[in-house]
Image (cartoon, rainbow, N blue to C red; front, side, top):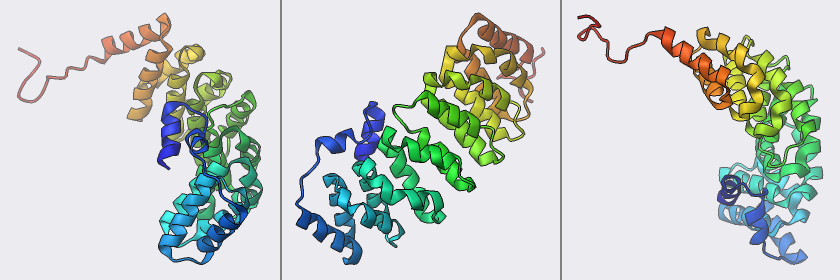
Amino acid sequence: MWRSTWDWFAGREPGASLKASRVSLSASEVETLIQQLKTGDDDSRVRASDELGFAGAAAASQALVDALTDPLEDVVLNATYALGAIGGPAIPAMRKLFLEGAEAPRRPLVYALGAMGPVATDVLLEGLDSPHEMVRCGAAYALGLNQRPSHDTVAALSKAAQDASPAVRYTAIDSIGQIGKIASSGVDVLIDRLSDAEAETRFNAALALARIGPEARAAVPRLQELFLDPNRYVRGYAIEALHRIGTPEALDAIINRLKTSRWCPITATDNHFYP
């Protein structure tokens, strides 16, 4: 887990640290660990799931998927990151459960697929077309973790940003923002979502525009209108977006807002503004 987090912070390809420290196991050693994962005590199962991940043991993929229903959380977490470390070879064992399985084991699969990077894109795009709301949500979330997103990914997330489900909409919008500048082709749909009925969708859209920055300059007129939004986070993120867009029009909008807000931080019942 910490290696995956470190790779993310360092901007490295998913699994880079694990690949650099990968250990080599024989087929018989892998089979022994699989049996420990299935039938061992708590400590044995935790250790087996960990070692299979560090070995990148593709032959253990199905056993690791099955371990996602283990009663011990440590086993589930290790199995999740082990699948992420195995990468593409583990996807066939994961696909059916991700697209059709129960919510509890599917949730860790979202993180495993997100940790794989581009090799998981196809199955995640398939998930965006699922009839199940939480599958679409999970797919949208995992796509936002991709270190090398494509324009096809942005297009699919832009479509998901107009989903009937509020949860899918605001998750897809958040992922567009996570992708950043390459997601500039999604600016139009983000502008549209600034009028969404759900406050979380509106402030995710404003935050996504902030992350895209100057390439989102077309959003300036609509962001100005959010100064009167009933949700304080929407108002705050709209100002942040205008600041990061940074065009003269965007900065003028912020200054004009400050000039008309007339808010004084020291005025209080015991410190009147006059005299």
